[in-house]
Length: 338
Image 1 (tube, rainbow, N blue to C red):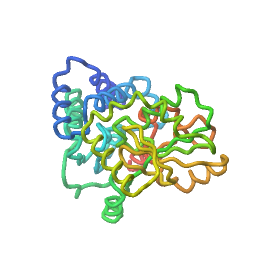
Image 2: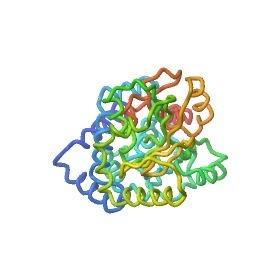
Image 3: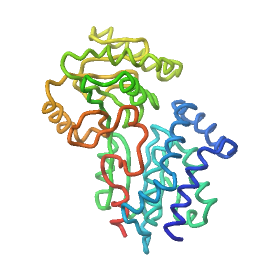
Image 4: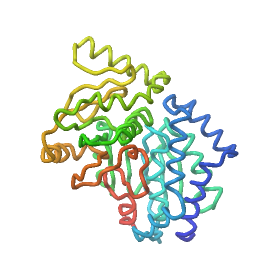
């Protein structure tokens, strides 16, 4: 197996995501929706389209060439503990392990099994090499390295249990937007994609707005009207209704447009159906906040030059192959095992 063959398989996988007559993919989508009520057509199709774009031939080859990837001559067994909060969230880890020629011992989340099973079957259909390099398992006793994604609580367990192995351990992270106050109407509307895609369940979803002083949060509200349909999703509506009742019961000041609750709160995290916001006086205060919360931030959406990588409004849920979770280069980690 040559690296070019692996790359070609990734490209073919991406192409399969847009095949309107792909019966196996249709079956996987139906099962994914049955297994996880959060995975509706809009969420699954967004994930498939995002991966289709990411896995185009040019992007795949640029990704592997820029990292100077070489297939391992002595493959290691890399245990993968994958999340299931959004469709195909564990795919990047799987592809990274395979791109370096290692063996993936994959423990899928029960929340996202059907689509990941489809990925495996598609890769194995392309070349038998993948049958030898992907093993679904519940036990990782044979793992020689670990890439695990979980909650803050589970990450502490992973850190302890796998301390003796090379590892990447990820915990909860959230994303925020830093507004300048001079955003266009289109840019403010685009924030809706960053807030509501996947119903806010992804680590790249905006859960906090940093606003310049005297900027009214209602200016953002006014541009989110087109996203009211999130209330048609029963689980989102239940979350919204629950937190609205809490805010009213606790007499917490908040804004309510009947599908999103906004509250002035310095916390980076906000629950589904809610969005926190706070104010800053100058960019030095912004940088201080970003430094303080660095270990909890996944992505920063902004049009400002903040001295760190930022994402344009509307693009937080369209990561490229070289947008690594927690800013930890997964390819480099896998190559370090060679």
